[in-house]
Every structure is written in C-alpha cells, then in structure tokens.
Length: 150
Ligand code: GTP
Ligand code: MG
Picture: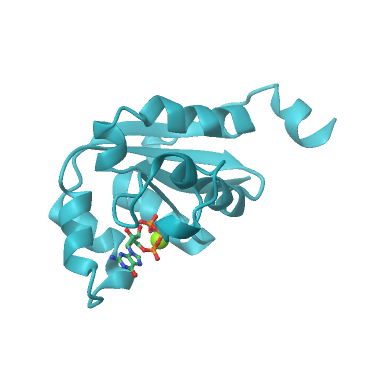
C-alpha cells in the first residue's frame, strides 16, 4: 500500500488544529504508520524544500517551517498521495475549496497549515528526512476490508 508524509505546519500546531487534521485522515480510512511532534532543524527544512531553492519565497518558507513545532506523520492507503492532496486543497489560498483542510481553515498561501507529499519519490525522501525506518509501525487493521474490498 502507498505511504505519504503529512505534516501539520507550525501555524496548525499553534492554532490547535492537530487533532482536527489527523481526524480527517483517520475518518477517511487511512492507516497511521508514525507520528511525532518535533522542531524542524535548518538542515531538515533545506532538504524538505530543496525544490524551491532560489525562488523568491524560499527564505520565508524556511523561516516559517522552522518557526515552531510541527506534527509529522506517515500515513498509508490506496492512492493516498493523490487523495490526501485533494483533502489538503490548493496551495493558493484563494483557490482552496471549502471542504478541504486549507479551504476550511487557512486564509493565506504562506500559512497554509499542512504539507503533503506530491509524488511517491517525494514521499520516500520526506519520510526519510523525519523518521528512521524503525519508527514506521507495521500492523494490520481488520477494518481495511470494509474500506477497500467488501
Ligand atoms: P507544501 O505542502 O508546503 O509543499 O505546499 P504545496 O505542495 O501545496 O505547494 P508547493 O510545494 O508548490 O510550495 C511550497 C510552499 O511554498 C507552499 O506551501 C507555500 O507556502 C509556498 N508557496 C508556493 N508558491 C508560492 C508563491 O507563489 N508565493 C508565495 N508567497 N508562497 C508560495
Ligand atoms: Mg509541495
């Protein structure tokens, strides 16, 4: 099954939205694989946003993501990368639809509450940037049969 890296950003932690955001992924039927509260280091931030290096908003991005604790998670599910990006909503605040996390709670493109991997390659790279392999918990939830097969 596919894995993705999701992270409640410092604004989401400060605003007390961790449980609300986690709850949406739980209710959708995804399986939690790992989770922890942490302070992103400068090096982790630079690795995380290396694709944006040199862009006008890069410095602010690094400053923001290291500005307070984040809640980092690994989740698993069929096609979870695409489905979770849909649940997160568009990057541009003006285009984030109601019903999405950003569309329901974020009013700014910069303070946009949550990160989600955008491809299997970024998911693998991002998971490794925040978690060691032994932190990823392997287990079975019998409810999966009621979500994916039936
Ligand atoms: P992340 O989950 O943070 O990776 O967001 P994303 O995948 O929806 O967007 P993307 O990876 O393209 O951009 C990373 C972050 O840079 C976004 O979350 C925004 O905060 C910021 N960003 C992206 N594009 C712009 C832009 O045009 N202007 C500004 N100010 N910020 C931007
Ligand atoms: Mg991105």
